[in-house]
Image (cartoon, rainbow, N blue to C red; front, side):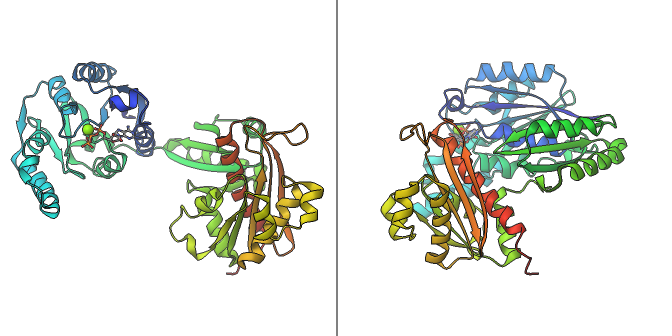
Length: 423
Ligand code: ATP
Ligand code: MG
């Protein structure tokens, strides 16, 4: 049987919009990966009664697992553990080994700063106070997590800072108390990532292949200019999933650019490595975002030489060598200029591949001829060119810039597919 879960996100900062909740999305993906069905996500502020209510509500759904995020700190507004104790009918007790662990962490910190460790005394006792009989998850920062049970339902209490939550979560699926919850068979999953094929054609192809008739469960989801086709399947539907995937691959052809969940920039770097090529960027309206995306990936320095932010025309002229006559004839926002920028940055930085963006991100600066959202993207290697004129429309400055960057990365990726692999 499939186990069911719920997530309770706590934090006034989230409900007032100061911090964007990242933990529920992370936990959703993790639960999915472990084969649990996430039934509900609830967010409440740092109010103990609200937390108790929310916990009661989630447990009443009959879920096997509730994971909470946040409110484990030493301060007065960290109340999750108290709420969980109340809901599970347990007293709060001081856990001495945990206190010793926290004291060791804060003691070392205090000593390194020459501060009086006494300052931490009370906060540490609070953080080491847990529901009686609960299992303690060792602290990643200074707050320990907690696993408690009520009539067969489990509650896992995790800290709020996303990196702490993720590090502590890593100890949860294998936890001895949670063997029943995580012991089931996770459904199989396969992802096809498609670029340059409209969502509706993918939907048509999917229908023509018979859809989910074989017991698969497919979602087709557009995001970041690509379409992700996620096929999930139970043990009985593995064959059907294979056939469906085979059909999708065949019909979508080179539109399928990846079958994993790594970032686009990682695929770009792989492509550069395989081709033995270096990359340089020339960016106008995105002002360095393409280079920054590539540099997201550890080891990018193997292939990324650098970039030139050519916002002003003088920089396009002087640093990239875009001809003055070209700028006067076609303007800075033109296919010709994008091409000259891509070639120019290759020359300037001695790179194999150049990629350029020039466009109008808005909100001002548009004309009937060259409206906001008009963006030219061009990538070149040798004499080969991959270029597009985008008309994104007035989708907002941030979006236009982000779409342009994503498009530029896809241009590099596609261009490299035509470069023979060095290997
Ligand atoms: P601390 O000991 O730091 O107080 P905590 O477990 O009590 O940890 P919170 O007080 O709820 O956690 O949150 C601490 C910080 O972690 C928040 O200010 C916020 O920056 C970040 N944070 C908390 N919850 C989330 C979330 N769901 N998504 C993103 N960031 C979060
Ligand atoms: Mg806190």
